[in-house]
Amino acid sequence: MQAVSVSAKLTRKEAELLNRLTRQYGFTSKSEAIRSAIRLYLSLVELGHEDRVKMLQPVNELIAPSTKNASELIEEEHKEEDEV
Figure 1 (cartoon, helix red, strand yellow):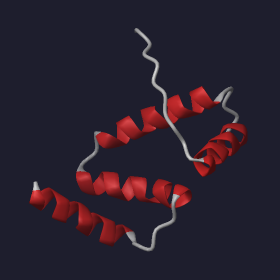
Figure 2: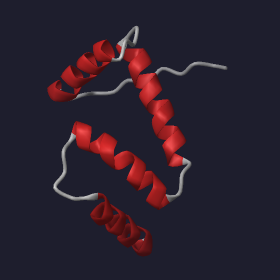
Figure 3: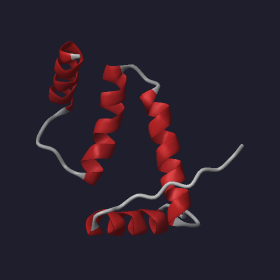
Figure 4: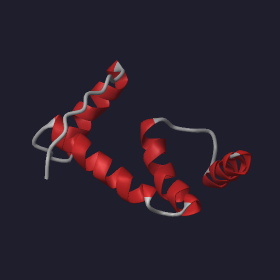
């Protein structure tokens, strides 16, 4: 497997969260934490739309709390699909 480097700009809040989660979950580095998060996300992307929204909603709530519940997010997803 060939490795590819990718960089990302994070807000101060995102960087602080990444530092905290890296320590909290025992990752050896921030890079390892990000690789794990990307692998998780890519696995979830393979799910159907409704299942994906249901699975990602709690994760999104941890990072950026929303005023919308899961059913509202699913409805938004359906509207976006209809527009495409």
